[in-house]
Length: 415
Image (cartoon, rainbow, N blue to C red; front, top):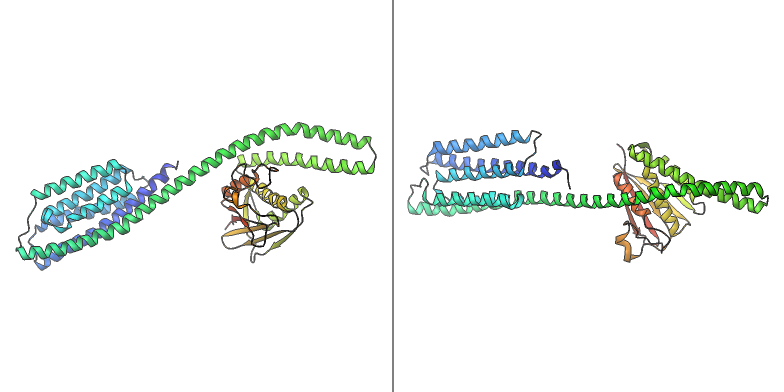
């Protein structure tokens, strides 16, 4: 679920829009009353109408001042504001012809806003209030004193103006409010996806911690045995193989130690600020020690000042996973290009493998979905995407038009 402040932010924005509607309608009402008073077309009770319009103006000012405060707008408060609009409109109608006033159709505007932005119970209450007011105005109102022909003309033109006003307000403002609610629902959906991903990450991290603990003892035993074998056997070929084996065991031990250090740095939320080129080159050097059989060409295409990055501990491991995936597809002639603009850093890694099978293209990045035919667990890309997303970036894979897979890593640069 979203945080409470995020849930209420939509109501704050909707109340701002409602206040803007009030101001526009108040301007139209005041202009109409002023025109009728100056022209003498309608004999109306000007003092009660002026007082009601003044109350509406005061409500607009008080609402604008209230929205500048830190207090969130609740659904009850928002419904109460709409109820005030209905009451003020009913009072204006009472002093200007009641149900015979063509602007009686404006009741639909607050009700449409309520239906688009509030739960059903509030909408029903507001609809009951509007219906009750309309019903009372059928019998109790201050009548127009006009000739029949003039009243018919006034009704026709008033109905047109009322429809135009209601249609414009509903089309523009209610559409904006509904769009805000859709964005809020999309944010909830994204948060649910993030929660699910975090649960999957926690499960993977738990398994990884257990595996790291269990691997420590056999690796230490292997290291001791390799050292004894190197002392006992002087065969140069065997010594060369044992040296390579000892290197690989030490690399495994270093990787486990790096895992522990990264977990501690993540617990402390530690980040290292460095230039993008330095970070990439140091990671490539480390990766080349892990995959000496891989060959690659590295190009730095960015112009201007080299961007700086705030790299958390797991971001380097994410890049290593992406490089390993490319090398697993085809270790020969990897093409690595670094570029940047004013907003972000873009790293492209292209391999010359068989590409991404279309059957699983949309599932890549989910746990245990792999293209390696049972030779991998499908966790590398999943963990990489999670780390990059936490850093504010994104990872995307494409089938290159000339064959192979193109991996794009985008990261935000520091100002």
